[in-house]
Every structure is written in structure tokens, then in C-alpha cells.
Image 1 (cartoon, rainbow, N blue to C red):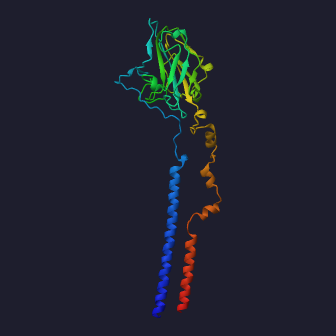
Image 2 (image 1 turned 30 degrees about the horizontal axis):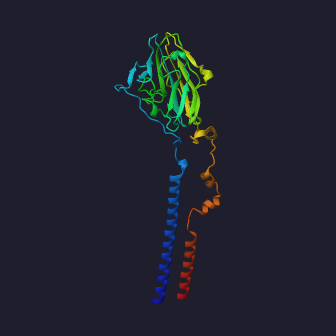
Image 3 (image 1 turned 90 degrees about the horizontal axis):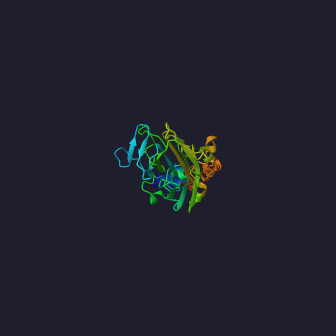
Length: 322
């Protein structure tokens, strides 16, 4: 073989190898770019979050523990905490004792203090029977609680934990406490009235009433709430059951706040029957399969043409050299 022929062949081979290298870089660059786009999409996809969206975050306040100034007493069946709205009748007429309470939860059912509904008031009429109580007739609750009250949440009314006789260890309710009523007296209360700047954002879910027993916290404030007609709007003390209590359950109305808590009945129905709701991502994934196949090796078209030309050139050089 002549020196010119050898040099030509080597040059053609080097040229082809360079083009193969370019092809590899193009393919790797295309894959890397696709991975980068995918990572960016995963980061910004709002559906990637599993947390419910709420207009006011949960207000988290641990219940006082034994030794805390606001821890009052426990007998193994109940736990009592100091409440500035806890008052005793004078003269003391008997052991009738109880509470009238309000709890406000956000769209996800978590306790809040009403920071998003300022200048809004909840009123519950209680009548002459509680005239002696400075916070009654009527009971008035102003939001946000943190702006108007010492100890805005004073009771742990919902949830359970094996570490406590009562409650789950977190405060969730605003109450007035009454003591010193005759054990045959009846405590009456009217329907909740909501007034003020953001009254339309608060929905009355219902009432949870328990009389003649220690308050059972193993209840759900949303699921177990009943209408005013169902609870009856009163309870009567008894000598062997001198305790009574009612909690009015309020919730931020997602239709008014514009927040979807992700737990609508439509979502639950679709989840239960195995179907999925359509969204932007689903629409993209439903594109024809042929398009998806074309995208598997991005950037392959032009490099492939170059390689083909290089091979043709190499063959031509070899023919001229023979």
C-alpha cells in the first residue's frame, strides 16, 4: 500500500471516529436535558405535595403538663386545666358543673384561632340561669382569639393518647366553665350566631353535647357534630351526673375562602372506584404512543445523517485509493 493511500485511509478513519464521538455527546446531552426538564417538572408540580391546602395554618399549643401553672388536676379519668373563664356561683348552690365551648377548625379540620377572620364574633345566648357568670348571657367569642383572650385555647377536647386520661395533648377549644349550680338545674343555650367582617367564611358544622358524664374526647369534631334540634339546646344536672358540656363546632368554609382541602366528596368517589381525575399531566401522558417513541432518543436525527455521510465518504476514499 502506498504512503498516500495509507494516510488517506487513516484520515478517513479518524474523521469517522470523531463523528461517532459527536453523536455520543449529542445523545448524552439530549438525555441529560430531558432528565433536567423532568426534575424541574417534579419540583414545580403542585400535585406532588401531599399536604392539604388551608387558608389558616393549624394553631399548635401543647396542653399543660403536671407542674405547669396552667395544669389543674386529674383523677385518672379526666384532666382539668386552669381557665380564666372558669367561675363559681356565689352563693354556691350545688355541685352542678360544666362548660360551654366553641372550637374553630380550618378547611382540613385542624384547630385554629381565627387569624384569617378578624373582627368576627360568635354569640351563644345562655339566658338568666347563668346571669351570675361574667362571661355568659350571652357567651361571646371574638376572633382572632389571640388578640382578645388570656389563654385563647383552654381545653383539649378532641383526640386521645395513651399518655393522658383525656385528650391528645394539644389544646383545641375555647370555653367558659361554670360551677356551683344546683344538681337539678337545667342549662340552656341558643343557636350559634356568627356576625362581623368575615362571618360568611365561617360555617356552623353543629354541636357536640355530652351530659352526666366525664367528657369523652374520642370523638371527631366534624363527623360527630349534630344539629341544634338533635342536641336539644340544653342539659339537666343530676346528683349522680353533675357534669355537662356542649361544644359548638365551626369550620372555615372552603367555598368562601377559595381553598380546596383535597378531601371533597368527588375526590373520594374517584379514589374509591379506582379512577383518576384529569389534569394537565394526565392530558400530556395520553398523547399518541408514536410521539413518545420519537422522544426516547432526542437529538438523534442530525447526528445519524452525519454518520451516514461520513461512512459514505470513507467508502469513497477507499475506492479512490484502490
